[in-house]
Length: 357
Image 1 (tube, rainbow, N blue to C red):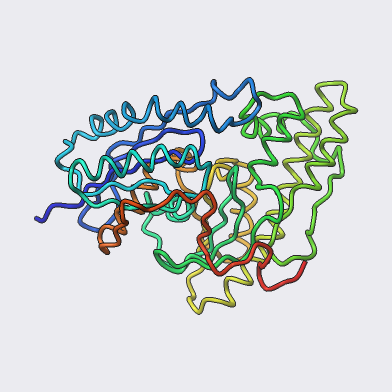
Image 2 (tube, one colour; image 1 turned 180 degrees about the vertical axis):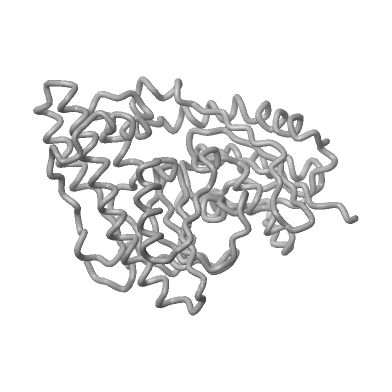
């Protein structure tokens, strides 16, 4: 039996320092041998958000230790590694540079190929870490920095159907949480607070809900929450606002995803209809539930990555590296960090589903 590739993945695009080793079985399904993620929540909590310089400093301090632990936990040795894959973008350039430089140096030191990975491609393919998903499929990528509908046609081939024209969904969750007095990162806490409130207490706006194709907008919603938050005096009102915000997001995603289904079907002749939701916000159980319901109504198969692979992690970076390794798609050691790096290079910022705003 031939040796299966062993890939080291490194992720440092924002405030998680992460490393992972993966290989695959005889059927080509990835096997995650280790997946180490070191969070910086305590460092950034007092600032209410990620401070790039502090994040980069933490990456520098931790990355060697995190990579060593990933190798140790995998049960493998350094000499077993066949290639090193590092996130090259998009993200905070001071953070990206740490993991990218470390990955290049590590690959050179063991004389193995280096692979630069698009962070968004990691999210786009992350459900394949535990599912044998066939191309093409429709992807909703929702995270702290990105909100996009993508037609995932094959490795390296993506067509954007819609995107946010302002804030990313994860950012809207975090900012709403901050307005409600919840410590960073507060986004995940919104869903918890919402369970205690009345989702119909506040009628919040749904920007561009009836125009713009499957493009998204959350800035107007965030502004409405800001105005209401200044009038809140009781916990009940806080819970009601959280519940109303959560419900509004669900309604926006339900409507826009339905439009995305139509656009996806126009572009693909495949009878198999698969819808994947990935990124940090994909961990929100209420969002999962409403999109599951839509998939049942529309005859789509819904797939979500395990919760541990929703947020930033290195397993998804290693997995992209694995696929590229098998195709011998290696990168030069002078590959730059790209703080802005679109998966669909042909997509203009507001060009989604061919509909003018």
